[in-house]
Length: 282
Image (cartoon, rainbow, N blue to C red; front, side, top):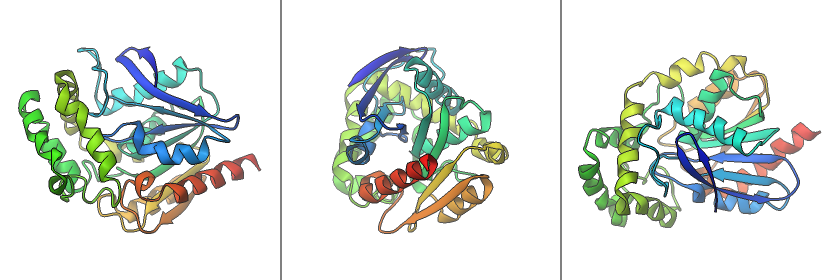
């Protein structure tokens, strides 16, 4: 892992791949760079794949106490990350909360380094917090960091992780990866502190993505919307609405997957991203 110091603190990131277009992948709440490992393995021989570990609960470096960990603050941190690494002509790819961050950047027009976006089964419109999982997480954010840590100890048990209020409706096949994501919360007080701050800040503005959606029609660069056809957390209708709303967008629906398509169908997702990049080059 590489690292870069930004205004909020030290951000770890993975950076590998070939000479082609640069892809920057964003993960969701309680996730890290391993969400994208299989997709990056597929794409990296030809394309540069950069995956930052955002301060969303599975990070390993605590943030500065004064860091803005609201959704807008973390979206701004993504922009700062692109500047710090001087990444240009970037395709920004987001799944779950990562897709919400991409939408916030699109709505703010803060994408001078970005030439295209890929939104993969993500929070959108009024689905914030998304589903049973999101609503449960937002409720746990009301706890103190210590009590939050005690509550999350339950996630050591696979039957608990597979509940609909946990990760059961987010991934069909990725439980081993999900368990890894829980370790920083189990181990480090500063990560529990950061995560509670993230959840409380997000819960303070439930209309965040509805407001962002009103500005998405201004985004004039190519977009690919990839949705899990049987998604039980992010309504498939929202994928269709996003594709209709964006001026230059194409929709792909993927079978046999829940929200975390990079875990459930990585080869299919990588193929669609490769096709999207090829269309733009052509």
